[in-house]
Image 1 (cartoon, helix red, strand yellow):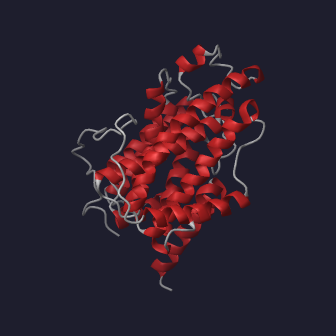
Image 2 (cartoon, helix red, strand yellow):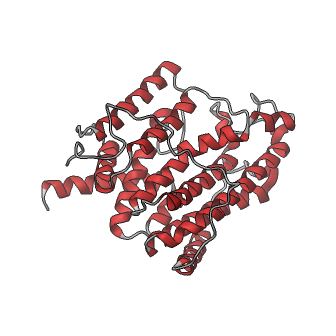
Length: 333
């Protein structure tokens, strides 16, 4: 083994540990990718997880700790600077950014997607208020829809119609996450529910986590789960454009997250008594179901994307004369 091979393995090991601790659901689905795609997918995840942890002062998505506004602003600026440095071809300073740099080079990830993802963390840093459901959907796009776009590039997708479907899957994931984590998020001062929804049901936005609001929260969580469903259905059409093992992995991940949403809705006001997840048996069942869905997607012609489903922005960032939106020649090994 060469020194370069050893370094590559170290990065992969770091990413694999990150996904194993940070997301058991994604880790289960990632095993279904072919080895090359799995490698890049887990390394991209490691970067996303690292950025989230840095902003929230947490470890692998858990145990968030309060961070001062000045400190979190500084952290966000650091993440942006390191991300731009990757696209400028500069050496990475951390394992997570070294892994990200590897994926950028291999798959020519668009810089605009990476910056849009960081813009989602900026919404948290700036303590953005979500008044209408469209505001919440914009947040979902930045923190998860864009991840779907980058993952699709890892799977070899380049056409915009399939990228739309990949973004839709990320949107469905995040709406499900918000529904599952309403109380946990409120505990660290975050609320992604639209203020108009809270006012409609008489929920004080500063006291969302209090037990007297659980029945009302169950209503709103159900709305989020219902809102996620058209995104999941739209994303299904993207399976046919993916290599079959990627389609299997994506179909499985979709099934796992959809089931989490179903459980949140079924539990009603008890949805936050303990964290909703899928069991090992559930995951095995959903892996088998995902395989069937992937096989059935081969060669299938799907209808056009529904016009009434929220559409991702095409040009969220203006041209930057100091950085390319593609991983171009300046990014080298």
